[in-house]
Length: 439
Image 1 (cartoon, rainbow, N blue to C red):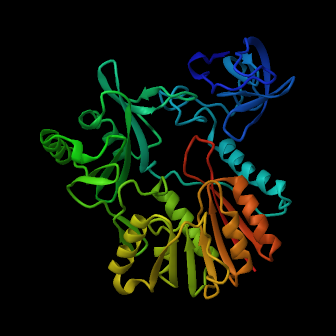
Image 2: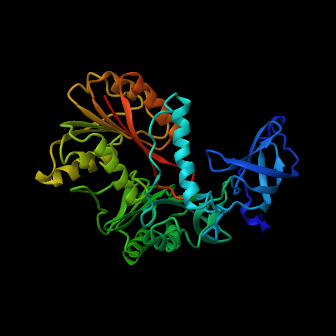
Image 3: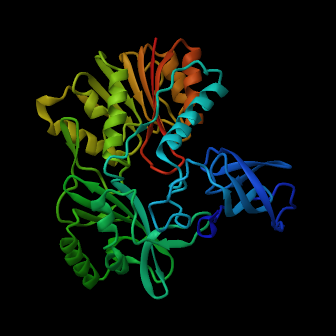
């Protein structure tokens, strides 16, 4: 029998059948774990529906404190052969990882099953879904750390699972080693910009030229005293940071952060979105480019800083559409800086969720790449479906919105020829997907 006290902290949930605002008393029960839920909590049958039990695995029998539809595992009575020892001392408390206790094989198969299930729900169960590609590489190159004063000292870490409390970290095995090492050194820097109350978020990005730090919640740098700015400048140089920004304004730039994307080099703006692992970016880009191979004119929707545009421009003319002006500027500068290595790249600033590109605006394009936010882009999918586009790569971070939008495309003559789940957020319930469609 294995004790689970440290790993049993679950998210608070509303008890089924409880009156609004009431707290249900917990009862100790033996649960037979049947499956893993979509959010990474295992499930057992309850009288009024599933009971969600964090840190248990399918096939296990556990003793747990049950309150409504939530359970706190006290002891594993019968352990699954798929169980493994977590690699991080903070597991179970830190909110960053839910599934370190699950072996890679069944964990990756479960992520594929999430995609298969989503497609089945929209009557696309016949689609071929590849095995999940583990794209962890050397670890995550992008992370958001929280910093606050705890007991008079500045602590840096992640938000505790199921709450708002900061969990200071002494390690983080999901990070690239260089980013992990830097994160553990940032407390003195955070101390200079932390308000007396509250917290800040340090968005850290490991680039080819070093770590870029963008602070959120610290206010504008103009509000800092001269002595604080001088201290920050010394710290940036001693730490070897490429750049320090506060709420979008550059405070100190020792160097420019640089990232290679295909044949181009991008200087991302502060806080820019980027795929979390370098291998993940390469994998998604390869799958997307394969899906539109042979195209002459490509439109990249929700282009960001050019993850797909700059690679597609190696063989086709590209229009990159994105709502963030700073990211488009970075993309265009990278394309222009590549000289003759790339074909023509144009940019268009557009909020594609509010005002999708119309089918008429896409009449000159024979292929498209779309990488929308988690909610998907149904309106944009409808316009693609009515356009002359023949090849499409749909990149998604949510199986349900992916399936919903792909259903629209299939109803207008597209075929989903390949679907590939990609795992970048190791030990989490998140999964990326690349769907290749053609007609």
